[in-house]
Length: 398
Image (cartoon, rainbow, N blue to C red; front, side):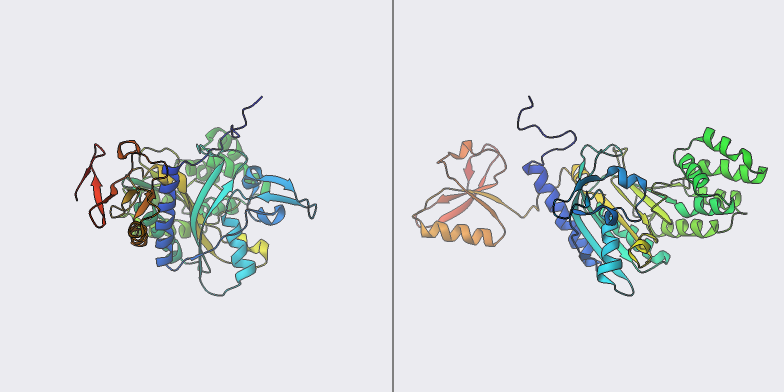
């Protein structure tokens, strides 16, 4: 028999210190989004399954919890990603012309943890830009992504850039059907050269060379010049390479390293152009992902260019351990004296000014209150004064 306090595998509680840090980061990043003109939305945790998975591909379906609605009898899904919901809002509910900027900070739940995640419940924070197919939209989104992480993390950052459109252009040049395209894309994504070698046997020498070159196109910015030469005969490839070059030039000074992988096809059923990932020093799993997904809105009746990103907020919090509260905010221990109007007024004023004031309910001594308090309230002859608590938990006049 399981103890009643056990949680399911890969589901955990967020305890006070981490929860405080996550909330501080959430507020800071949402304020940053607002400064760029992104408006906050919050879609529901559950939707009808067909709406939730529209345009999202097989991977998201496997990650989605499904249940039967006791009111309608229809199948519902618990969201495993917020981005498709934001696309639905833009396409179906808002219906605005021109550029729309939306942002969110919400929880998702997945059937299994993915890519090294320690939890199936993830707090996502992200931004999405709709209505602009030009490269300036991708540049804005990537600058905002990097600035969001930089606002709380001091470690070095690596930006990984790829473009699904390059492999899609090659597939079109090869005239692949749907089944062959899937084999081709999956072989590229996994760098499975044996599968690609077998796959390329039915093509001429020129096509085989292109197929086998693609998985080798990764590294620093010199890869772009190599790709222009190696894929010169493939129509449409130049556009994808140009987009990568433009984003690279715009953000290269904002990160410590930029890496390219022209066979990066994560979410090839979903993305339509640039794909990005951000890695923090010391972590082999990306802390943020993003890219262009121009075709998702079609399923909701309104095709709109779209690009955006999502950050794993709890993992970002783990990279910002030193970030707790602003230095100016004090945590004050106050005695509980109910018959002192002066103390009540002092506590109210301190809280109004932004200080944390915690009242003693158990008659504890200063030495037993635990860590985390910076000041205490002490009664003088006629008034209450805020004094500093030193490292030995003894009060000294400030």
